[in-house]
Length: 402
Image 1 (cartoon, rainbow, N blue to C red):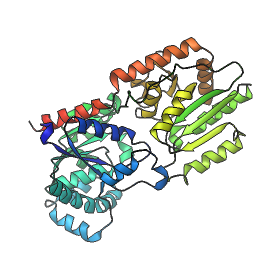
Image 2 (image 1 turned 180 degrees about the vertical axis):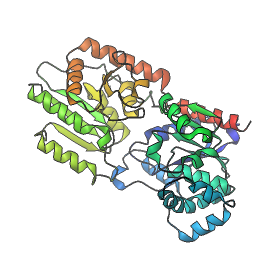
Image 3 (image 1 turned 135 degrees about the horizontal axis):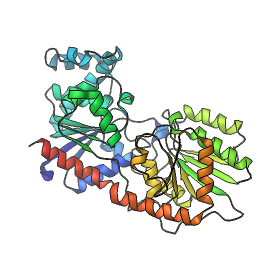
């Protein structure tokens, strides 16, 4: 079946700074005989294009999201009678705006699928990309599926319409699976699998053993994540300030950029760094390549991600794969990844004091740090390799075809 499958792989605003997982999964699909056609709504802002493979990815990607009122009218005529009314029923007014934006892209998707012989489209989102796939299907386009990467409320209106016609769905955690089942009631397709994101454990590994901070040297803390208030970087800054006030030489490096490519929440964080007097001790790297992330992780004494809510956390997986002692927050689905005290540490979200204590605990106990690092690596290798997502997609497409 895989040698005959031509898969449309639809990712919003691709390739973005957090899209390493998608690229690795796509490569794993191709290694298993699937012909992958990359699709996206639009390119990301220039400040978010940072990977070694970004140029190749953009050259391969068909972008669907141009505004086109005439195409929207043409698409409307191709929908089944009453379909648009059913899509809007019980939804907020913003649903109409989403439909008008998605309709031209859906019409283009139908044309692209026919031109390239796409058999199935997988939307790695439950936002507008999923709406585009659902509309295209209702216009006579290919079957589709979707992945839920976070709470449903983060992905806009029209969720029942997006899910109801899907051949199957994957959901990254058991927690999200339970929430989706309760919220969507009869709209969830009969075929659903829990499939977390994953990382390339062959690339993300150590070439030298982890070393604790020296008695006279600084403690190097690394974090990685979008510059967004929900990632809790401001709490990590406060924790660093507390530690330095207590006489501990802590340095913090944060890899990641805001969604505007550097002109959004980054400016608030920079202001906070200055207010706290941390400018000499905090580095905001911006969007960086996978190679730079790997270099930062393997030089770190501690990895910490202070998210207020986190569906699961690829950045946590990357750190654990590199055997870095890892601190996360007991928020969202992180507890499905980290078992506190076994393969990492969990602290309450929005608690700089708890973060500071956890950083000191790891940095001051090399035996604990080494044990957490080794167990973390083992956890990721056993359960969160990038190839597993590819294998799940191939299996579910075959099962959905009967």
